[in-house]
Amino acid sequence: MRIATWNIEWFNALFDAHDRPIVDDVPSARFGVSRAQQTEAVAKVFVALDADAVLVVEAPDRSRRRDTVRALEHFAAVFGLRTRRAVMGFANDTQQEIALLFDPDRLSARHDPQGGDGAPRFDRSFRIDLDIDATADVVRFSKPPLELEVVTAGGLRMRWIGAHLKSKAPHGARGHDQMMRMAIQNRRKQLAQAIWLRARIEAHLDAGEALIVLGDLNDGPGLDAYEGLFGRSSVEIVMGEGEHALLDPHARLALRQRLGVMPTTARFYIEPEKRFLQALLDYIFVSPGLMARRPAWRIWHPFDDPHCWSDPELREALLAASDHFPVTLDLDEGDSQNPPRPTISGT
Image (cartoon, rainbow, N blue to C red; front, side, top):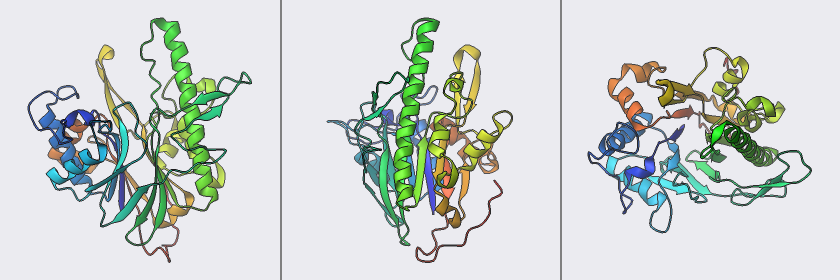
């Protein structure tokens, strides 16, 4: 089976007041692309991915007047996608929801939030001393992760957590000093969210559950100048260490190298510098037990992936659809009672 995560930039702006996709020549919220071009590009990428489930990061809004699930299912119906059912968890007020679009013939998925003393539910608050002043700070997710119970058609039962951690960008800062203070404060909050997420991961692993954590962590080793103040990136915290370490070969490669060539999943234009910046922000982590199912990861990068590069229509669709590129994970579903034997990965 194939699982994907994809952050679709300004996806919310491609739906009308009735949660139906917009196909017209009006400029989209994505620079230099019309709504028709972006909408059709997103659909082309979905078809090319041919995934059984896609975690949609920055999914359409849910509010009193909008409905995320309805919008995604309308999109699937208009473009004939087999991922035609949607599920989401706790709504947020950022117009960037987290939702799963999936093929109901291949799996079932339901929102199943968990919580305990050490790791409360993601719609609640988490207490941690962020600045080592002996006073606990109260942390909340601006985008609560989506916690799912997933059962495949073959009977494989898993837990999935879809995440979009808060950006560290110091929005609204005036002057260098304020920008630095806000950037450090935002990184503290993001690391606290990563610690909270890791506590929930530990609970699932302690229970012996097969787990996949996927989405946009908005962070990576060496991504900003403030990482050195705290010792670890949020990616390292989410991955963990030892026998409960989650696995993603792209993250592992980035952590091992830090300098030199590394995979990337996002491409942003930096206006003051007149150039593009590439970064590794999107991940699919698996628990150790799932390594027996021969996982294979792929970043659908229009320039780095040979298949995407050699298909001009797909390449242009990836560039028009979003500033992030999809990441997929192929798993051998096999027989849930007799899973495939482990293999050693060279990654």
